[in-house]
Image (tube, rainbow, N blue to C red; front, top):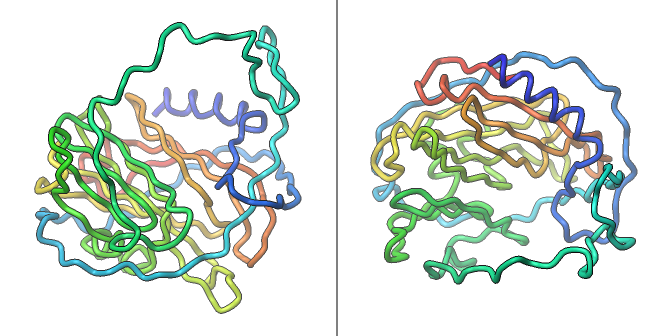
Length: 291
């Protein structure tokens, strides 16, 4: 993980300048609470179950229709880097400065994804997906669809609660999946990673008890349908990890999130980055190193 730590340090240094907005459909932005930089901490992912299941046999359970209070996007402090191409006041690069070298190619395939009536929970759906050699996997709040890449046929569809409960976490990942999903295909190792966050809300919209989880399912092989999954969870006790995003690298999985307090209407508290030892996850280790 030494390379992971070095790369993580570089990300942390860049974060204040490049923190992306959370969900971008808000009319107001909360005040920013600046957090003093902290030294990296080593923690662990907690392993849940490791079943070999055929996802085509998961029972259909209609998603619960519930809207959660959305946090406003953090303010972005734009910094012009040396040698950058000048843009307009909004930060967009001027059309006269950069022109495309070629027309974007047409899509290789086009087919309908998950529909709201059968699979949707709320709005916006936070649609994500990734493609592997055989399958395309799509996720929305809060359901997952696995499609045959060659034909676009839906091979298996299920809710996050139905999928994550197969891990028997013993925490909110079993029954309280709220979405902000991530789907990654790791072409270095031919593995799939599917994730979302889970927590409980009280009547005021606050996270209560004040704890949240990032729930992970990692395929045991390149077959996401019948090859089996390792399940892990990461517990958050100091804030809600809103709108998590992930990237894959040869030495690890990297995740970022915008942190907010657990109380309803809490202000943005800063961005956080995690570096996850993917070799341990793929091996089904009982504990996985995280920085």
